Image (cartoon, rainbow, N blue to C red):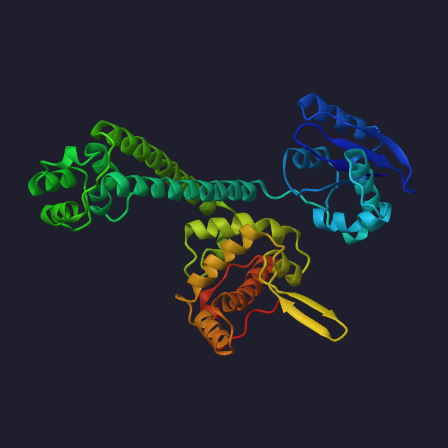
Length: 399
């Protein structure tokens, strides 16, 4: 038997079919604890969960986790592939929830030998993935909040933006809290400013006179807002930036601890210039792909480092791969670009790619495939990367 699960945020649709494609049962559980529990119980009435594969158009989420926990083989079906297969069931490509759950079940009935089965990912890997992705989200929010603060200062108090280099630094936020408008800083002297910085352990190596000169040299705003309103606007935005920066600092601490304790860390920790955060990103994003990949080619394709080749008749093109795991590619590309600054071998391969006429992004992906072969070899043999065995002029470890 085979099952198709058309998932949703309000309700789901589930269809079970037999080996001949005949419909055995269909039901539409609501997206509640009782609904999901009843759906799993009804699936269990058709036999051992381990013998009832379930097709679903996602690789993650609550439903996938519950199906895996119940023991069902979960077959993730890419929406694009499923859409391309719709003409099997009608030229109109009709779409509705009951029809989709049946089509998903029928799709794996005929093609299950070609589709990967989702395996439970190591819990520590999922934790790192969640932590690093949340950090990325918070970093984007902090950048947006700092840009908003910068725009406020440009409009109402340009001096507050120019006195310190980074608006999200503790000293800059403390200064804007204490002096949130031009009026509050009108009587500020070099000595008072230097004392303020000293109390907050400022390490910017700029004396009070130099910082005060930056403040006084900035253009004077012609804002028509009152000084109390400007102070309120600035302090509210400073509070938002500080909250996000605090969250980032806490996440960095937790990520560092989790990355160090992860069982895969010893395999990759000695890669050149990888850093703790980038190591955590690579383990969190590449780890699940390594666990399910059957070959190096699959690994390179899923991480977006391999191009897409299209050959038909006299036409042959090699193009950039757009459909890929973007989080994994970004984590790898960030590290690969850093690696060439610490590894002569990596720099040699990058330079050779550039000399062949490849632009920087293309050359990085070319170098990345060489590094990925090494990561793949370390993963297969469970052997830690040894920089001493990897020198300029050597070819990458065979996959």
